Every structure is written in C-alpha cells, then in structure tokens.
Image (cartoon, rainbow, N blue to C red; front, side, top):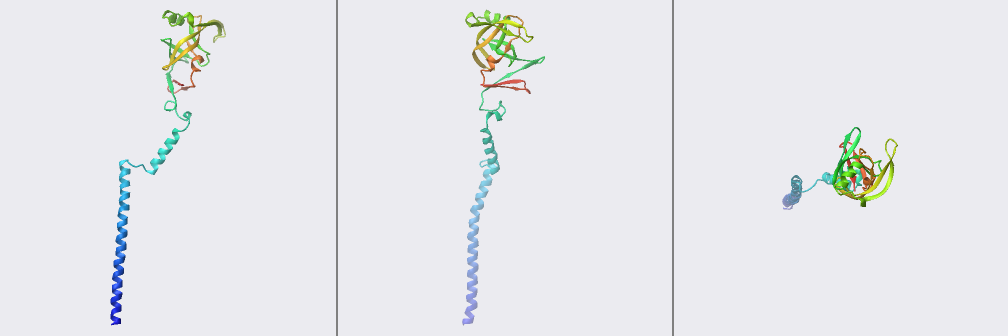
Length: 211
C-alpha cells in the first residue's frame, strides 16, 4: 500500500503544483492588463494632443527660456518687451527722408542723426506762423550755425510745441529756423535723443525707435 500511495501522492502534488503555477500566472496576467491599459490611455492622449511628449516639453521649455533673454537678442519688431515706433524711409539720391508732423502739419524731412536739432527753413516757419502754431512765445534766442559747405549762417532758436514721429508725440522740441527759404528741413538729435535707442532696418528701409 505504501508503494501505491507514493505515486498517487506524487501525482497529487504535481497537479497541485501545476494549479498553483497557473494561479500565479493568471494573477500576473491580470496585473499586466491595467498597466497595458494605462499606456494605451497615454498613447490616446498624446494622439489627441492632451499630453505633450518629452521632446515637445523640452522644446517648449527651451522656447520659454529664450523668452527670458534680453530684448537685444531678438528682432526689435517682434519683441513684446519693447515699445517701438517704426518710421518708413524714402531714399532719394543717397538722402533719406521721413514724414514728420510739426505742430499738426506734415512735412517731408531729411533724416539726419548728425544734426543737433530740428532745422526748418524760413518758408516752413512762415507756413507755421500763418496757421497760428508758431508764435513769438516760441522764440528762444538768436544763433548761428555751420552748414554743409562750411558757411556760417544766422538762425533763430525756437521751441516747437509738438513733433509727432511714428505716432509718438514729443513736446517742446528745440528747433532752428534758418533764414533761407530753400534750406532743407532736417530732423536731428533734439528729436532722437528723446528715445531710448534708434536702429535702422536696411532691408526694409525703416527707422526703429524704442521709447
């Protein structure tokens, strides 16, 4: 009987072992299903745009880091941290002209960063005087200035009530009236020094003023 029981016991033990292993494998399989479902959900979210991939996150983080760079690292046209005015220039025989409003009247002026102030001819001064925007109250002093050919000519210093350039209003701007009707109208440093910086876009022929 002992010899008969041993094979039976071994068989029973073997069957129990198989059942136990199957149970373990079955339980392991049940744990993998939720895990696989989680990854499926992530894949669906990525495909639907709800979740960013690690590569996309890295690119976004780089983009946000770049936005913290000084504004000078960017084209001033697109930097949201700068207030700018863009003034188109017209070139004529190597001279650049811009449109400027002086006391409410529009004038085509020479863009001249080498000039110390706004310079207007006696003809423009007469127009401003006739429309009442230039009066004796704007007079400052008599002066003299050197022109391009080296001649010294007399002038009259005045304060212009308003100069509008690129949509920006400037007040009490120093100017010189040249006693010559054909003298060019110049816009110089009495205007440009009011701004933080000035730059030129040589491709688009624009002046960029930061204020």
